[in-house]
Image 1 (cartoon, each protein chain N blue to C red):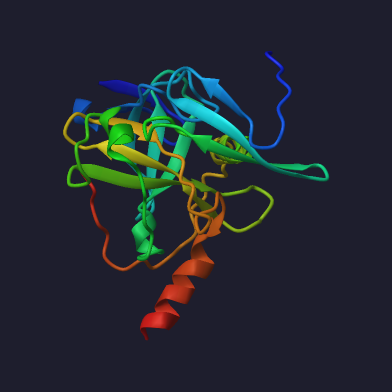
Image 2: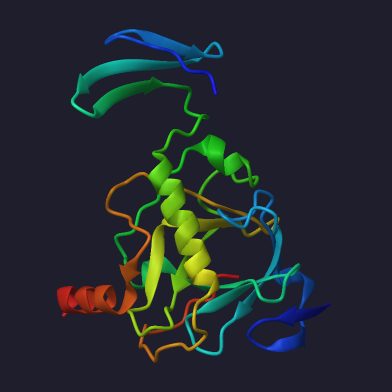
Length: 149
Length: 77
């Protein structure tokens, strides 16, 4: 399928990269269809809206810089996207790269959970006070490295 | 909006299985107990607002990726 993307312009994308968010994302409730693309730099991804070219989010696997990350989500909430357990779930954090030069941050309080079988996802809201909307990725990655060396 | 006056230890029922109790009133702060089934999500409004604001900021991200060494790439798909 041909998709107009914010990062790459019009490109050909495999149908299997398509992910539905039946409830949308918070603040973007009316946009429900996305595709997941590799970003030009690993390990980032783009979540590109199929409906509006200018709506695209940068994603990262949060466990890469926070191996201690935990998501406490009840089973009922996972049922929204057809998940009965964590085995088939993909977890992403949305990344913010401010244009003013402030640090790149990841939102660990509102992770995206995707059922990799049916490619349906939702944004969860975590109540654990350890997880905030702005985690400095570089700082936390450095802290992890120091802890393991 | 429905507006109800309650005293400490009095409750409000929402439907048949959600009850809201006024636990304590101190100055301009009220402590509220919420008893609801697990399927009902109860959050502070600020949490939603913060995530909404962060999603908006993320959507306006500068698409310039810093060079970072995360080790081996893990492909989630």
